[in-house]
Image 1: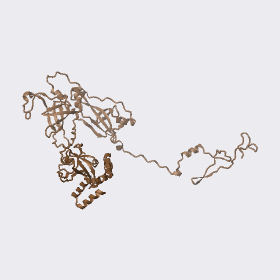
Image 2: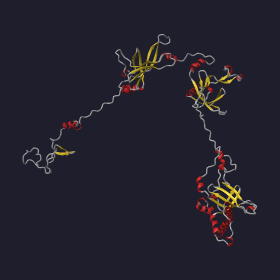
Image 3: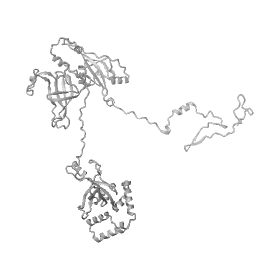
Image 4: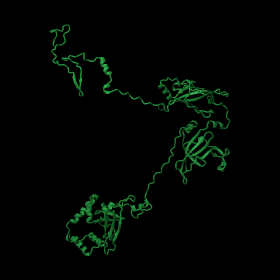
Length: 582
């Protein structure tokens, strides 16, 4: 392919040159597939890969395509839903604009004042554009105050137009029903709302004061008071000023007495005292409000007035040297009123402030008088009297009708009919007791011990049961925490002390050896060594004379079998000779 002609040369054969770098001279593909559909596209590259300029979109076409809505593909666009309509009574519910204002009222028939300034609050309710005018109530003013204009829509001119919140601002006059109100200020919410609506607020003004009210606030003319205290001045100065104290009356020392709380009121206007009861729910008392009516309380009586019948006659100044005053009521001190001693433990904030200003007392802390539970009484068992077991005797202290102490049933079932028997000798300085032999029976089911002494003819000692079944306490254990003898305490050579009598273990039966072998962990090394030495001595060869010598323990064991069973004499003889020759 021939490239473009060189600038300045005619487009004739021989004046054009071939570009040796071009190797591809095919035409651009104008058909293709997209998403499974055949589409036609305009070629952008000519033969040889040269860029085609006439197939490119112009900027106007590109702008048109960018702003063109895909109506054919997606259809007509849906309009956004309109915003939810919120009515005014919902949007502005409980939203009220408050303005501080005043109006001037003429006083024609008075020599002390010509006009009166009355301060009011103007409320504008945004939910229905209604307004109301309320005058704060001043105590003892003698003027009918409160709601001057009830809530309604107020007309601002003769054409019937009503006041709107856009018409209200600080520093303006508004006329309502012939009265002109001067708006001086508004609250914070009103200021924020009006500024958010683009209204420029005027600077606030000072509230006008009533000249007659200010005149009354001036100090009274000074004059010399009489020698006695002016009760009228006290009444006017301390009217409705009451000191409140919290006190308790502790009557626990008397029979059926208790600690009760009261409130003491001290009236500063006439130095009278009142005591009120404090009732609690379900306290079992009648709901009488007063313990003592309001009256003056004497502190010190004259000497001759001790026998004065106070219960039927009132006490006058002639019988009293000193009355109770405010300085006598101090937190943390006790005072006696009509025979009862009250302890003051707290007062209210006004009382604290009054004592700080009047007497300079600043430290009036609250005293904790809450009921403290007494320490629990330790349950101690009485000393052991020596009769029966300690567990049985202790049951009399646990219940009115004593019950037998609980037993270890599992231990009794496992160790039922298991008895360990030992041969023992009495350790005694008496020569007659050296030949006495005793059989100890230890019952594993109940940890009890019984002692049996076999009768011996012509010994002068009556044999038989020496000690019935019982638990034996070790000599060095305490009465409160007794320690009883156990299987591990019985071994050959052990000393067993039973109620002041000392016994030495000499021998055991075969069942004890098997029990010790199967329960070796319960026994000490000393006990196991004594049993091993005993077994070695028994298995060692003995002279002929010693082989026929029958041990006393075997003979005693056979006697026990004879006494407690139905074994006949030939059977015993058989056992006797077999025990010798085995």
